[in-house]
Image (tube, rainbow, N blue to C red):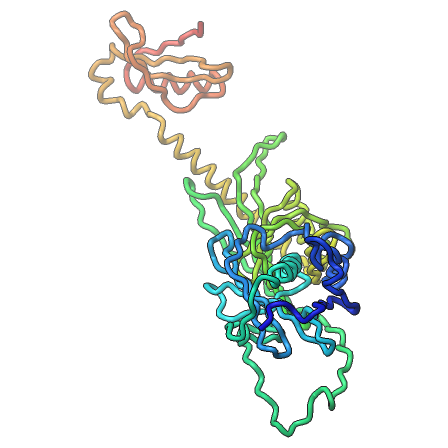
Length: 460
């Protein structure tokens, strides 16, 4: 079979026609007429080929033209991605009555993770990749022989949104052609149905006096149906973490609680091949709280992406204020001002109640641990009774000294004397005292109990 497309080879990408023979030099159909793809994929006037391209960093391993002279022709690509995994694409073209090829859709899968192909969303981050695949197919077609036996010919040319898709059974031979009996009505606008969000779930972390700080994680899931095709369902999961960073001293002498906070969003479906930058808009319906946040999204699996790396230092605090406002929210993902996802999120005052309860509990735990640490520290200081037996054997060799280590810090030492009456060794008894009166009273009691002399050592 002749490897080139029927002459003249014409690809129709919108309501008009574009004749390949009109292209000159090395400029391909997409390179010259990127505006057609802009209209097709809804990306306005921006240059698609310079936008985020999931094919970046992939190495092409195989290209096949699969053509069995049926209604559709397929371009099959196999790449090796950055993780050394295979990724496969099938670009589908439909033949028209004028013996031209019209782009239809693109299928994709990772053989090691997905058994079946699925159709890519052309209004998702895959759009630049689809554009590049079409362009590559044009360039490679002139030097590639077509085949009638490639496995991609067994993959349906229809939308493969369900991974469990099976080909429909053929109609009876006496059935009339659908095109001759059916009038295709204009599709009705889809209505978005948001299932009531799940209750906020709370996961409490372990805490201990010498272990990790108190930590709680809140999570909630929103599920949607009735979305415009091709992906008619979606889900948003919100995770917020609050962790104690300890107590801080306030100017009035009281203690406040320091907190570490984080927010993560999981969204499905969002087929992202690698980390990429987006704008995440989370805002109350009255626009009083929230805003636009520069974020990096990373793939979790073939269907889910996580938005967790925020660009601004105050982004987390701003997001939490929006949750605590108790007002319904709008969740939107944008790229270059193009809205990719926009969904409503129900919200009420529950989050703030749970947050306040956790913060109050953390403060109580930290205060209790602080008191316990203080008690442990006090009991760990040497006491006069610890030395009683040894001192009473040689009372002339010991003395109690009262000293002022720092201004306002009065200490009591049990001192072992050398032959000249100087200090050979010493142990601090108790904690420093705030005033001379308390220091003197304690030192006198120790001296009397051990039967040794008391000395008031003047600071040099």
